[in-house]
Length: 328
Ligand SMILES: Cc1ncc(COP(=O)(O)O)c(C=O)c1O
Image: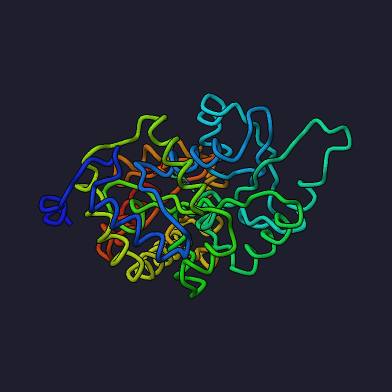
């Protein structure tokens, strides 16, 4: 990947003439089955451009109550687009249902609240890397089509969902108006995400990309890594999922009430330490002292597997948990 980056053929992406960026965008469009795609620095920027393109200031977007776009990014969309979110709590691990979306899209009898967009997240991060099935996505898509509201897919980890569902990414992409996926995260590129959609949407997204300051000139250096991630990354995701399961089973043995290992479908796991008498912040410090760095989200401990984590690292992480529990 580093060699490909060093040798990348580049141009100026402001003018759309960086050949490596263009190759990546063409490949992403081909894989998703969408008209066109746009290479962007981050998943957040993909989401924010989509929100800005679809949702008028003062109008609503509907999303799951713990979705990245509506929670972590809520300040971004407030300042960049002046939009509001209507949150819907999914019954199971962040996975919205068609009937819930239908309820959220019922017209406001007073004609004040207007919904311009529905956004779904697959896999769902805070839901524990949970997978929405292609049928689940199509149910929501049918509801959105009936209401005439576009459906956007935050597919930061859509290839993880594809690996579990056993479908090509085009199956998910075909059901939604537009989508994004991250080349960083599980696919293993150091940087970059891709937005995909119809020609008009991507033309507007490109305009917004420049407006938001992301015309990143000789971006082909990064796109070269993205192309490799896109070609080679998806095939190795089942290894990440298997490693996450081993880690979850190991933690479940050490702290039995803290995690349901069977619910770990992909590369994300959450450890609920509320029954230990110590807050997650203390566990984070104890684990860091043992050489394991973890994230804290909503009072739970989050761990992820990726291309840099193999069986040895999983056993190392379990060793750190064992020592932290002893030290607690
Ligand atoms: C579901 C989801 N969407 C979007 C993002 C944002 O991606 P980035 O960190 O590349 O901005 C993340 C990051 O964790 C995420 O988990």
